Image 1 (tube, rainbow, N blue to C red):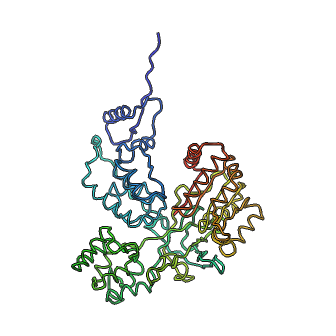
Image 2: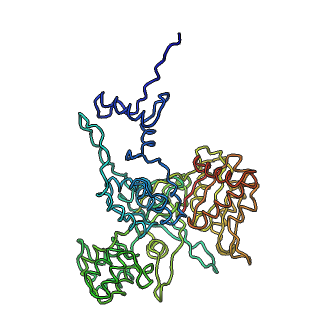
Image 3: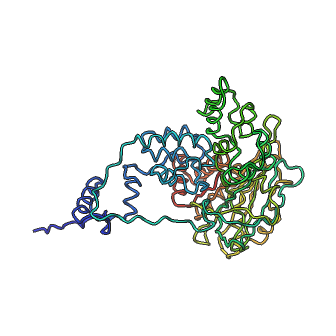
Length: 535
């Protein structure tokens, strides 16, 4: 006679959960039945959370919109029918850059759970993300309440609020000392790129390669004074307990103009001007210039309106920090941190526009001055745990920043893994950043291979992805040997083109179909062997 064995009971609800024993047993049974579990492998609380989703809303956890190259309209279409928090995630820029203090997934959860009320923190997403989040946020109060769990017999103890360590969050920055800058381009370059050094010894910050550095830059005083003149106000007018000049310099963004400023102007004017301001506040573009309107341009456009300074300041967005990939290694130079910064300058109409942080670092901050900073821990962008693992690094332009850090770190720690760098820019004679350093690394053997691509040296443009295809067989060999591959740089064009080249190389030299090659690259991502720091 066969003995009947009882399968082990699955414990999904932990014993220390705030439920009675009968409630816990009922919940266990309900979840086992709903999930179709066979009772052979108890699930951890982490697995349960992953399967049910943070809100227990049955979401499958997939995020097909999590692609930095995808337009927001396409992302929102992919998220149709998903829970509100997932549609909020699709509204974000998908860069997991950390400028908001979260990754995209956690920022959306925080908003949906009303732990975060700021809807304008997604710097790369800009206005389109903020507008979409505002629209989605309005659905929160309309959404039906989630089913409540059985009432606990004893109240759960609220977890204490977590306060980020000083210098580890945008909400808790520390002062660091600016040391120096040097121009990386030579005469004849169309670009302006700076190597920037900071001294961290006074604030005690450290970091690991792959992390980013957040900087609270200050607005250009010339721009601030022009805005004050357009307001017809005094520099010394008191606002928020400070002078108007200080508030406009340190606290609020002067570009781009927020919808709230257009809303304010619509209340202060009439007729066609009011309709125009209302249209701009709704995301419309009545004059075809909405994309170019910063705060000063708006005051010029509505020149007959002069808001009171206090009301004007309240209509502006807070000044956001800017993040840069760190281009140095704490292991190599403790207490020192370096950045590689492209300076942004352009002209709209006849007026020069300046990138906030880039020109702050390139010309406004003086050696010895302090600036508020923080270290943003990387999300899935780091050297392999095994120092013997080979790495392939693809970083044109300022994308070289984290890979300079990787190489300096591997040298400092004596990591034996092979290193291959792809670097490219416009012209070899004036845009070869860190040429002496990289050539010395190649001579010493630290840099196993250095592959270069110059887009303006010949009659035909030639990019890093073209160089990859040229050496595709060797690149495939490195991948087959277990190399990790990294990309840093522009998300919209370069990263997409490099990934397409990688798929082609895998298909050609790995003897796979295109679909199989796409799956292979996707598997590299899942395993953490293909990592990106894109913006």
